[in-house]
Image (spheres, rainbow, N blue to C red):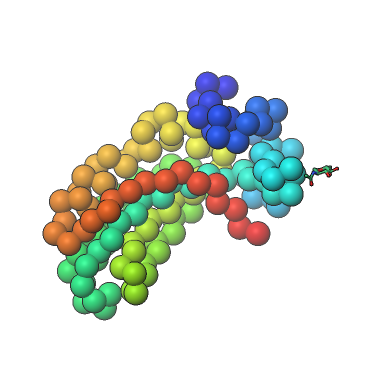
Length: 147
Ligand SMILES: *[C@@H]1O[C@H](CO)[C@@H](O)[C@H](O)[C@H]1NC(C)=O
């Protein structure tokens, strides 16, 4: 499967990329479609794209954080349409001034999203980069399992 090639490179387990069944959508702890990690002691079937940055000011009143929230509101409906199984987590650290938006989709929906450049990632990142006080805008792809 071409669309998951980058993941295969990362996690090196092509045999796990069998066509997904309905049961894989139920986020079972372990099933036939899970990709093993750590000699089988862990596995994953959900992948997250994280968008993160630093904001400035006090967490309770920060203007940059408020501006970020408006960009999130703008793009959240698009993210919710990515997959029936999508989960979006918003993380804010008041001490280190981290903001993170973590969008996690089932493995079978990750390939098409990756191919699209994680739309609407480009637009989202451009908008938050333009906010005064926002810095260190970064992204990361990481598996994300609830255990
Ligand atoms: C990896 O798993 C196999 C099968 O459970 C086990 O025999 C082996 O000792 C494990 N390797 C390590 C380095 O723990």
